Structures are given as structure tokens and as C-alpha cells.
Length: 347
Image 1 (cartoon, one colour):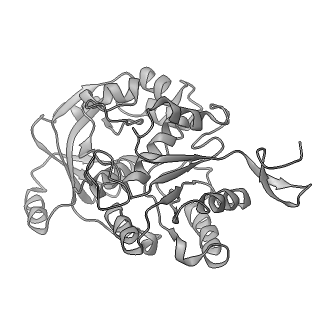
Image 2 (image 1 turned 90 degrees about the vertical axis):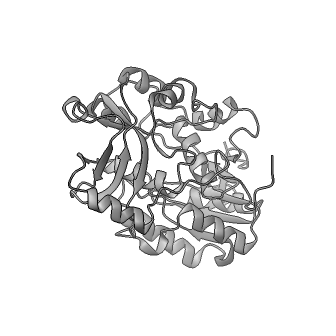
Image 3 (image 1 turned 120 degrees about the vertical axis):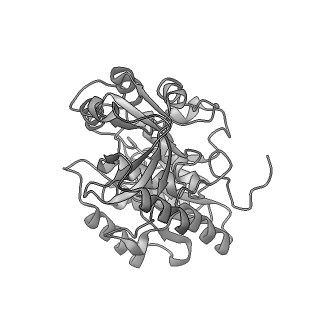
């Protein structure tokens, strides 16, 4: 494998960029009224942005059936590259029916603003039950990911996408660092090993403990909390970000930690999503990824350490990013310090 100038190559070897040039943007704007329009869900908008900025490299658009089928059954793209979660654009029959394969489709956000373009290459039906059982390990409609799956349309639209503008995040513009920028930052700082940490919950003492343990053995820590769509009863993103800011101010070494937002939507797919989150951070330039207790889980659908075991289903080096696996951390009353079952003398 040729030496990549960064600490780690993007997944598939090349960082994707699907943000249009000013000239392309003018062309699309000129055709805006003649293209069929499609309004994206919040999740699809998150996916559109992550494809465009390279977070989902090597994807250049929404998956066609050739990629979708092996991702669902085998956690691989058609070319054999590991990929664990389908990135699709599902629509209702009456929306798909008039759309012609080979045509451009205008993509609007939930407010009806023109945000992107899909080059429609394929429309295909998919098996929701098969996706539910394979990706989420359950068909239970109480599972938030399965609920979204069963409520969405039965036809996937596939094809490359273009994003018209990379807009600043409405809540956290100062923490918006895209993959090309994070890689540049890591290069400038000379970091060769960077561990990423993912949460959708407020960071607490156990998280602080495991991130600092990880930081002992690498050059830097990339705190990358998810601020895309989460379920209604999750703690709001602004509260979670405030927790991180306090830690940055008072608890972490300033020169070895970066805080940035992850614009992805949460799927609650447990083990599959742990792989997905690792590959996403690989695209941001991270060499290591923290996998703790019940990563990306919800309720009791997954075993405590299932998200760690799934990494063993891939050959060493296949994912390209190293999982750092941590046990359940807690405050040990005997030693009066944070510990895990591996390090605490108490039972």
C-alpha cells in the first residue's frame, strides 16, 4: 500500500468531495425550476451532507442495489470494501413513479430550500424485513431505527449527488470541522496517531476516564459528538456540547484534544453502527476509535459488548482503523477512583 501523506488514508483511498463549483452551482440554479423536486427527510439531509464532504467516502451518492444488497447481508460494498449500514434515499411509490432514471432530481431540505442534486441512476424495491433483521438485529417496531425503516417508502432512489453549498451549522458553526479540514489540522500538528470518541449522550466521568486512558497511548484525542438527528427523548445537542466545552476548558490538555461536531444522523444500530462510526472517523483522519459498553445501542436489543465483538468479524487491517475496546467504567469505592472491571479490586 502506498504511503498516504496523512496518518491514515480515507476509506477506499480517496477523500470524496461532492460540493459543486461556483460555475456548476449557477448551472443547477438555472435549471432549478425545470427539475423534478424531492423533499429530503432530516436523516437524508444529514446523509447528503456527509456524502458531499467525504465523511462517507468512498460513497459518491445514495447506494444502488449492487451496493445495497451486500451491505445488508455481508457488511460489504459490491467491490468488497467493508461497509456496515445502508445509505439510501427511500421514497413512496407515487414519488418514485414519475422520476426517470438518467435524469437530474432537485433535492430540497425540510424547509423547501434547494440544497442539492441527485443524478438518478436507479430506482429499486428493497426488503424491509431483511434490512431490519440484518442491520438492527430485530423487527421490533419499538426499536427507533426499525420504526424509521418501516415508516419510510418502499423504493430506493440511487445515484451520485451534488451539494450546492456547505452551510455553517446553525447551532455550532465554531465546531464544524469537515474531513479535509481535520486531516489538515492533524498534519499541521504532526500527529501520527489520533483516537476518536463518539457519543450521542452527555459526556460523564466514565467517558472522561476512558478517553484519558486512550490518550495515554496516542498523540491526540478527537472528540466527535453526534449532532445530527436523534430520537426525541435523547438529551438535546446544545446541552451535550456544553458538557464537552466544560471538559475542554478544565479537564483536557489543550494542545492534544480537538472538539468537533459529527453531523451524522443516529441509527441506533448497535454493533453495525459501531463499525459505521469507526469508518466515518477514519475518513476524518483518525487512526483509532474508542468502542465502549453498548456502543450506539438502545434498550436491551444488543449485548453489552456486541459492538466490540463485531470488529473481530473483519481481518486485521481490513477496516484500517484500530478499535480501542473499553470495559464498563465506574467509581470504585475501594480505591476511591475511576476504574473498570479489569482494573478495580472490588467485586
